[in-house]
Length: 385
Image (cartoon, rainbow, N blue to C red; front, side):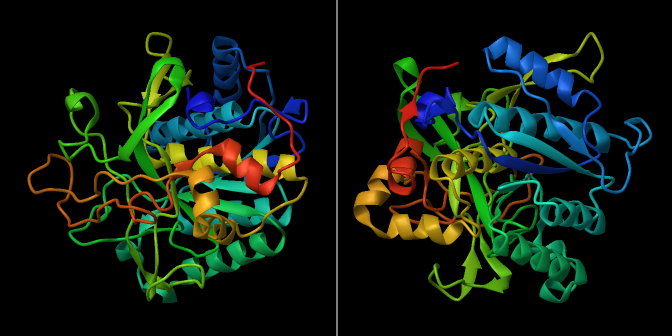
């Protein structure tokens, strides 16, 4: 569906999209069945097979979800979502899964540093984050400073970074707007979420801001209740980079489908024989690897890295012609959380609107347009392999 809706080519210059590039995915704990699950995904959807390179910079932690409560299982699900999403949208890219041995800041930073130092990706996907309000010391926090230093190293090496804006509205679990870190770092492209609607043949029809707690835009009447809402808020740590207006850095920068109701199907094979199978997934954890994969396609078509990618996107959006060609402008919805929604903390939010807005950034991708802007000589093929 996403290939057609977002006009993502299957081939570029006669080769699978993403050929010649590497995508580094950062996750904690990993999944005990990541390769087998990808094999099942590929077989089911007719994708070419590939081998995931799994790296454990600090050693492999045994998979024991009972001992860890649900934490390891949750990260295993995240790992499957990241890997399968990247392979779908950049089928020719090499996938390097770099596994931290816990989701603590130090361990995550060590995994990212390993990926950067060994240049394991033209792009890096990070489907995680912490609300800035939860970071002791804010910008003086040593782990934040360490991460920012690593991100600057990545940009200087031509590596583009992507991270999720969050799944709990503008407040991300707090009663006031709260950007998620590392998405709030200016070196990182912050990816928000939408509800994607398609017409016959999976052609893009419309998109609204992902917010299951807002009845006016919740897809299909939210039959199974609210799953989440896109993040997107001003940073309290980072000042606005030169390519954004205002005093403080704002997230999101871009968006991609994130609603479970309009979600992607991912195979999980570590749940036990009676529960293994395909499940619908969503969240901005879907949008980060999606944008990373799309950027790998752009890098492969262009034959050169981008490095810090947000300025490139904002430059394209500053021109009305390329903005209309390269982005779907999301103008409907908001990321506020109302009082009394079970499982969510109420907070004010921000409205979508014409051009840039905090919930959905510049909008969702029209990949054929981005390729025309950034790799105009590339020959694109839309026939599935």
